[in-house]
Length: 112
Length: 115
Image (cartoon, rainbow over all chains, first blue to last red; front, side, top):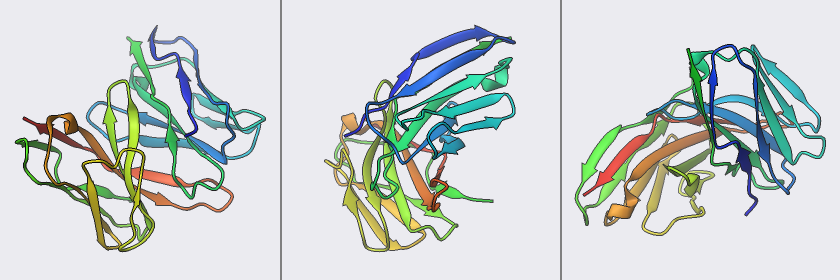
């Protein structure tokens, strides 16, 4: 089983601060996805990256896929309380036929 | 709008009861999955299905079974519920993307407490 390690596990910051969180593996993935999950709800897909070195932006969120397709980062600029939630990364191993491997998640709290 | 609907949001069952968790998707997807999510353990795959009447074991299938009689419906069954099956259960449906990555849609989750 390919593992995805997410760091840090918990993060509490003030509104307006910038932050970067990570999703790392020693294995290659065909694609990697980031989700945000709010308490009591299912995860919601934020982005999918498929090409090594790819950078995608979603408003104040910037996602990068590592050149070797083994890791990814999520950068949030000027965090807002609405960004609070659990951030999950999930990778699809080559040939896995849509079967994803999930990290354990990063709990982000943004204080007003 | 894409929709994955889990029939029960909150359930309380007794040890030994048979439990059915239903999931319906309206996107004509072939691939459907059942996960459970526990604090500190993340999402773990229980069973998945690539088509009607097809099922494959995930990483933690013990104590569970599934049924896929229709394409839109994927049911998770706990034959004899135990307290260690208290968890949040998530159903997912996947749209296959060729070269663009797959898109996974989750239901809202079913919180099961076994007492």
